[in-house]
Length: 324
Image 1 (cartoon, rainbow, N blue to C red):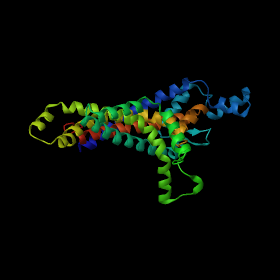
Image 2: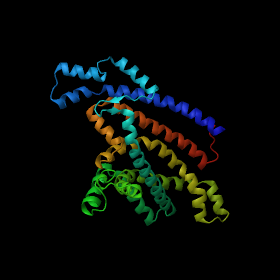
Image 3: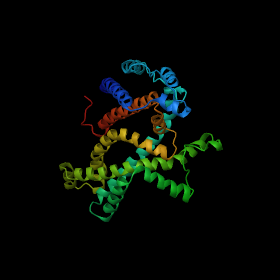
Image 4: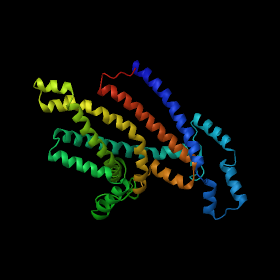
């Protein structure tokens, strides 16, 4: 009952947050110079005033900004994200086509980063000050300091061009026509490099965070009490220290979802991954404002829902935290 009440209140608050984000995105994008009419006129090689006026009228860009704003608010409240004149499809249809690919990439990279990073941080904290700790910390610092796009390019050079183990880009081998389990395996094969590229940066963050968090928990009174009672060190680390050390990891995970979406734009562009990030990159250069606004709106919903899930996960990890 308490959880249901909390969810209702949380979803109501998040609705206002998403609405505010949509309003900010609208005005920020309209501050940028240029529009879809100028881009299309330039591509057609015809930029006469009459042609430009016809395009702007077709796209609704001839209306004053406040009228465009109220029309956009009306569309958002009715879950109508508009029409992409550049792609020739409704924005909602384009988002439904690309969203699964982005979610697959994000979830895989985050699971890889959290699981491997937390494990490495756990090992480093258990051997603090020793050679294993130094090696893990150095490796984490190297991944943190290396640009994501450079890691992706090097992965392509080594594993795709040099060793020919993994595909260069794309999400599937369309020409081979795989179905069923073969298609799943083919998608997983294409997913390895993009997910590893996006996940390595966050792996470094979670490694260092888990190490620091565990060392902090090790110094608390209940751990010293457990040691005094003769509890084995391995049990202390697994049952007492690890669970408390996971709380900062969960907090960081919720905060970083927006940056993961931003990193996905680079990774999807490098690996030609057909997700929202690559679509946003194309829409930005084409000045397709309806599509950009739809992508940003959809991304904000994903981020706020993840943060709501993080709040619920807190109560599982630490029963002392109440939803009320």
